[in-house]
Length: 531
Image (tube, rainbow, N blue to C red; front, side):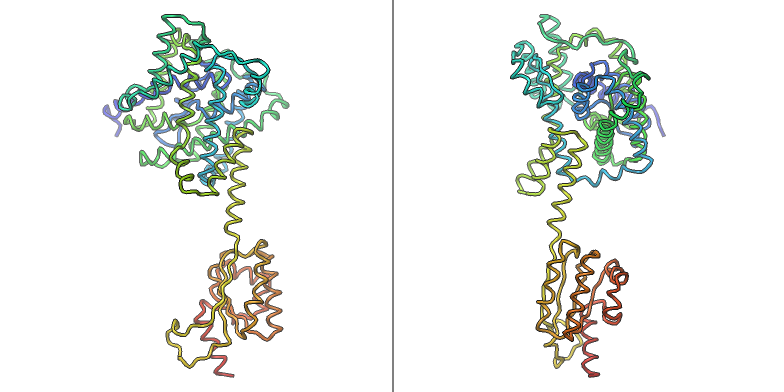
């Protein structure tokens, strides 16, 4: 059902995305440790390859701020060939992730961890642009080391560079939102800064030569494929692949709600993998889906994957027609764009929510993940955040509650008021029964001291392990020696299965297991009548 109307919508949306992607591609290319041309090449090839093969009709991929934050430190340690090789390896890892259907694992990452990771990346982006923004020089493998190096090298800012950076920030902040939909504030800021520098030719660092080619001189070469290089790049490649998977699938899930179209996670990972395998051979940096460009595509009326391809065509035209002009863009102007982007990429609404509501665990997950992202790499930060979230969940949900109550005949229909259950007690167990609750479970004997018949209600026990079963067996043996009747009710299937496998069922007697406490009481009444 594709027709001229839909193509017109795709074309207009594609050109709108081009306007958004152009300054971002230049900025992210520079901030990745490569150059502006690498950012353009990445956006163009990703738009055609990844966009054309994407798991949804709306995904727009290219260089992103989060990815550039990882790549900058990698480029400082291993050079551009290290970045390209790691990008190639990350593509292979993404294909393997698709083959093993790892896409669903993203849904297991807690929201505060993702929010903390995003904020950590934003801090890295902002710190990584200090040199470009102030026109200074530093050294170090990460943002913290670069900051510390100013004590050694001195800090002598270029006032003209600062002027361009502030100019772009002001333009982006005051640009009316209703204009932004048609003409992005970042593009407006770049044009104004470029115009000022073109007229006055101020002494600031600029983007430099942008070659009119989709294959850069700084492309991945086969000489980089040595065993030692591959081994050394495997860890950063895993980080890049993880980021690509997380960012792409989260972008797809968020944008899918906007367009009411669910993303095919495995197909998306295949597209990301193929794109990142090919892009390095053209000199581009690793790409991933970008929520800013994707949301613009949807809001601009984009209908199909052609939006991504048309946006690439627009970038190609910009490269060939405007390359000489873009080469005069001040780096501090691009730094200003990235500063604002870093601020806006924080999930401020989510951060405000967890702090306003004083969700202690969520706040700790957010802060720890953010700090780990700044101090370590992505993989470690995500693992630390998820591990902490799991530990906090286990701690909060590992409490076993034991409550005992006498039998209330008023709550039992069909029972005679003359029935005597004074020697019967119902003990309710609530929570998981495992090694961490074993000591609490040992208190059962205290609850059962003053009763002859004990009904253990375990409907709220969802899981039990061998440690808890072993402890329970010892308790049952001790209570049996005291001539007490032990009855169970409300067992979950998996709990009953554990009883059977451990031999606890044979120790108790199969007749002493009931659906609920009322059935158990009726059984006790029969025993008392027969006695």
